[in-house]
Image 1 (cartoon, rainbow, N blue to C red):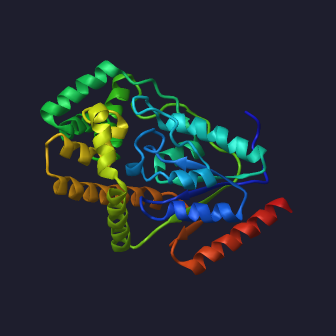
Image 2: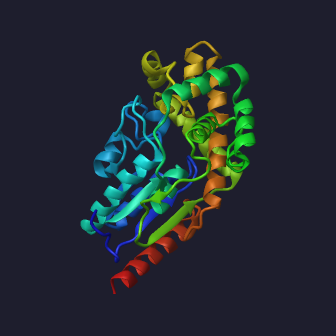
Length: 311
């Protein structure tokens, strides 16, 4: 892989769901020579469109985004896969004289790209099925307790109901990878980070407004079209916020109003986890994207930094 240009930075634009990342990214793309790269663990999958809040087709035609619609839902896609794919896009952007602008809310993907990713073994599907059966019988908190007994440090970083991470942690323990593995990859050039933030009540209002807009745009109908093929599947896309709740409705587990309310609550919980993650990540700028004065100040400072880098 060719070396990255020392003059051009890599720009991270990160924040919780519904915080205004796409709007600001497009504004930056109008001012700077950027290559937009999506950092979203759901947007990588085809067919799951409205619930992942992918930019509309017309927007993507004008502002192309890398790493959207690159996998079928049946295909696995890990943080390591993202780190490798995004690194290729970063190098290509720098080679073309562009600034890679990585936009999204999947904190683990940002971290994997920035710092490298552990060289972990592949999933053990038989062991994973065994864990799934145990979880259906005993519940994920029981498996979380087993993890706590085997590796307290790892368990402390995982919520007792976070099925995917509990499952993977127990799998790695069974394969002899208790806490860490050698790390590889990571970016070497300057990284400038913008983190979007809103007061909690304001973010909750934005989430409610966007979810309603998604339903108006056809989110329910999209879920109905996907349900025959994916409604009972256990792929990551099917477990994602919004789709999981609508699939429960379509499967007769709850009413539509209950599913919509559950989707709203789950989205707020997702945003809370994202806020916690990004608070722990140092940023060059903490930005309220609707503060026009602050946005202009950051645009000016970015231009200044770029001039200094090229001096």
